[in-house]
Length: 268
Image (cartoon, rainbow, N blue to C red; front, side, top):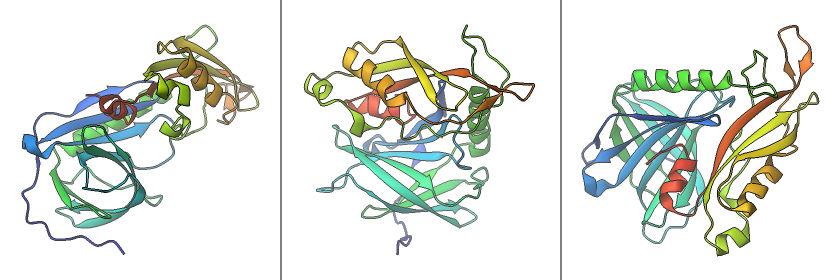
């Protein structure tokens, strides 16, 4: 069982304001923490159309000596209320000696982070960390507003927004680092592929078009290959009839740490 340990270290303070970044696939908020030697970055991430009631938490911190990237569990404590929240953890090693932790709160109930002044994070095999949160209520409001606006951005064939009812869907695992083509890794190919896809009346992606090339034909082709056939669900027009619709997103293929953060919703 994971327990919270008492912290003797000082609470880390943010060095600037939240930075909001968004595209058709996700919305992200992030800021860095001081002192500079801490090398810590924290962010909140919301994927367009995801059904989870809570944002994902992204934490970048110095890597544990000799530790390998792995999945695990964490305990979050929201202060001053003392509310404890379990979360799953997925870690990625970064070339600069840090690790990126993706923390997803467990359970189906919404968690009110708005009144949290400090967030304490204790994950398996790591020292606990306490962060001061800057205006969390305003930050979360901006994040949810961004997500709501992105979910309204579905298109007709001409690329014009259309008022259709689209089912919730989660793009978290559409493309993962494990999908990186081996030949692209050997050639050190990276970039952002922008795609536009069509969801047919059967509720699956039946067309995919690259609208922004990454500079790597291999990565661009792989992006559409992974998206085609994905099940989203049927959309309905204002008259209730099932209809096709189009959507768009950008997917980052990254080998360097800064682009890995971008993929996770943190723009640096």
